[in-house]
Length: 283
Image 1 (tube, one colour):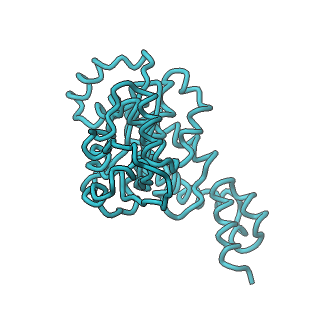
Image 2 (spheres, rainbow, N blue to C red; image 1 turned 45 degrees about the horizontal axis):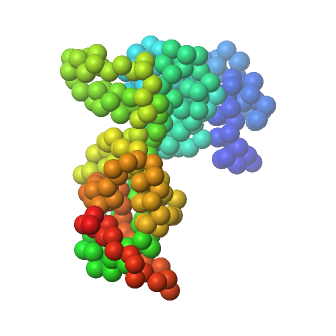
Image 3 (cartoon, one colour; image 1 turned 180 degrees about the horizontal axis):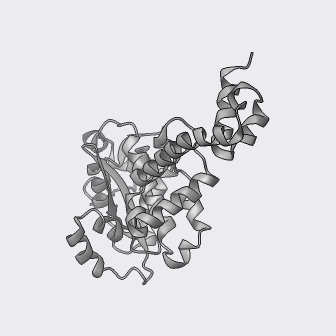
C-alpha cells in the first residue's frame, strides 16, 4: 500500500508539472482516467494553489505590488511560483526568495530599487512574527560602574533588521503607507532616480511594524552590537564612521524602539582607572 507522503508527492507533482509527472510518481488509480479529464480536474486545484500563492506574495509585499501594478505583479507572482513553489504548508513562510528572484529579473532595469524593497518588506514580515523580549533595563545598566560600561555586551532583538540601500527606500516605503492622494503627493517629491545612501531600521511597537531612518553612525553602532562587539568598541567604530555620533542618544533611541533587549557584563581583570565616559549620560 502506498503511504500518504507518496500520494501527496504524486498529487503535488501533477499540480506543478502536469498529469504525466504525477503518473511517473504513482501510476494507477489517482491518474487512471483519460489525461484530458484528469488535467481538467487538476486545473481547478491548480488555480486555487496559484491564487493562494499570489495572495500570500501580495500580502507580504504590498509596496512591491503597488510599484508594479496589479497586472505586472500577478505576472511576477506566477513566474516566481513556477521557480519557487511553496515548500511549507505555512503561507507566511512563502516568498523568502523574492528579492533574489528580482535581482535576476528584467524589472530591475526599470525599477532598480525593487529587490531592496522586497528585502525590506520581508524583514517587516519577520519582525511581525518575532518573539517579544523583555524591555531593556536601563536602570540596571546605570548601576554598572562607569569604568565597566565599555565591556558591556548588549543584546539585539531577534526581529531587528537593518536594511541598507543606495536608494531612498525608507521614504518610498513610508509614502506607500498613505492613502492614494496623499501618497501621490509625497511620491512626487521623492527623487528615486538619484542614488542616496539609505539606512532603514525595522522595528515593532504595539503589534505594528514600521521602518525608521538611521544615521551612518547609528547603523555602524547597531551592526557592531549585532556582531557581538562590546559597547566600547561599538562606540569607537560608530564615531569613526560619523562625526558627531552621540552614543547616549543612540543608546536611548534603540532602547525606546525595543531594538535592544538586555546586557551582560563579562568578568574582567583590566585596569579601568582611566575610563570616565558614561554611555548613560553621554558625559
